[in-house]
Length: 310
Image (cartoon, rainbow, N blue to C red; front, top):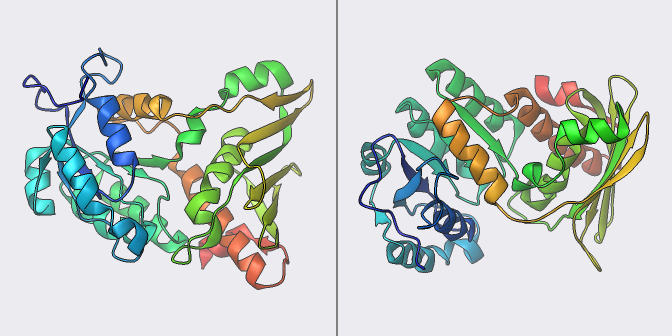
């Protein structure tokens, strides 16, 4: 059955989507607007979309016309400007695949005081990420960003019950590279998000070993814990995590799918509460930027705080 906004979408529950250049647009819309969604997404539905997306990545820019037509087929109104979109919706979902323009796209949304979720990558640099966070704080607008993989692993309570205090973690995920983005920002973000979901904040230094087929990034935390991330670009890939703890070692079952994240997004729209501290998102960006610098400097350890200060 086709997913379309119903005539009973209440004011306050209208989602506006920005950037129709990724398959996430249709996946998210079909879930939110599904006739059998019930109260899973608290009544939120995608009702309007502004197609503007990447100008930098030809492969994805060329998909905008097709995705725009597909969205129309789902009953979503296509608008011609950011101003028109913001006048028609209550909350916003930035799906544009290009982290280079997320600050540009988020700025008018935040200034219009619309709660906003920004799909990965949150930004394409720590500088832009910090600018978005500070703008949201200044305008007192709820905002958050994450990879869907954050909500496809066991939660902190389940992990703690099994392993006790987490003493370290090893993560792997695909790590395809896009030339317009620092390496890990494009796809490695999924694995790095898993790492920080398990380890929490407090990473002080990052050291990266790079080959065309594989990345291995080691972070040292301020309590002497070590977290590792393996990015795969050759052979069999997938998502996985081993968590080391005081009581046990646990291999996590990492599932796919967007629904757990979409449930959290709807909850965020309703409560206006960010599900985890924004400081963790900033540290994830700083970790990846430090890894990029480590690669450029021959694999030396880079101080995370130096990235943040710079």
